Length: 191
Length: 359
Image (cartoon, rainbow over all chains, first blue to last red; front, side, top):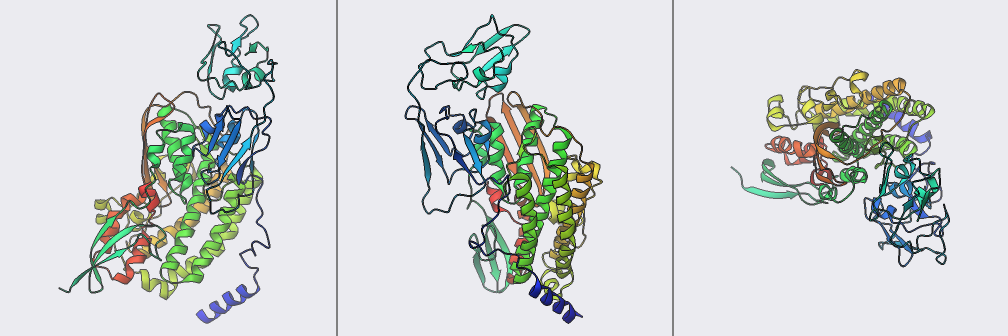
């Protein structure tokens, strides 16, 4: 009896396709959602706000605002997608392909190219601009206290209370990313 | 009484998937005493949760274990949700249950392969892992990760699964069932396998209670103990009933795990059918204040989570107690009096995860 069972298994195995792939001749196919590695897609658009580094649970990202440098330690990154989700400018992208194996603990560095300081326009904020002590300012005359700025603030630095007509910003927590200015429906926020 | 010899077993050993260290005191070929020690792969993950925001910390806690990573992510999220009083949407609970049960299937298939490898049945080992690969592909398709998913977050889940993919999951699992049955037949009826497992490493029901055994080890000794009965996820709505075997030996523990694979397939099928529409995550505002403790049934057994927050973005304390930690005393009891050649099988039947234990 067991002889026939064995014969069946042998015959099946002879004619079945192999379960493995001839890697690297046949490359691996990734799904559309596979988290392979994080890439800085648009160094020009990065504000160097540092939210990605703050949210990274593995401390893999380092942002130096003064030198305009964005770094990621490939061995430390755990591909959790937190940085990609929190980036206010959507300049970080998760690619499906894994990074190639490396005997060194590789750190990828990106130079962020910022233009010369200029006067801020609504929705076009330059992080290197001198903002002075005033920081983020709200024109309370036109503000409707909708709270969209607070809801979109990645640093949770803004507090809005519609009932009390209260709008306040925690200047230390504010990263000056300009996202609130972009989202404000009444365009009453300025730096 | 023969001469006593101490043989160090692990942390580096060809048969061990995990770096457990046991000092085996032998009299001829018989083990008379066992001294376990841990500390080889300590990573300080619990401490790390105190310096990372509680929302991102879930992705760290997931790294406690590479096999039951979803369970750890769920446990940590649920503990924080409990402390903050967040109500998780229904759909998220169903999705969590499905991913958790898929993890169980992949964990048990992995374990069956390792067991086959431990008694030198390498083709069986390869076949178990070949089937496991299909589950990993399902994970990659639905979550983006193969073993660490980062899909569970505080308040719900990060990714939705559409109905076509749910149907595909059920179809893949249904297609796998006959193949798993073929493998199960070898584990349960092949004489060369049974010779290594029947009557080996017996743990009686009383001993299991006394030593605090959890998971398949406890259920293999006739103890009806499963944290899925405690109201986590949607198990109560899926008609879940724990699988119990009475013999208490290695074969009973193996049988529990094999039967649990089929049970998980049924649970996933039911959950996919009943899946309600709706949001997949609740809004999370504010910080954790207060404390919360809960228990969750992972593939290896019961895991315990304790969380405490003091109103800041960082947790004051996150404590995780993993199933292997609980099963080590039972392992020591089983090993006493056994043959030296049976040690690898017995170590494997508690499904040790030392990386979990040491965190």
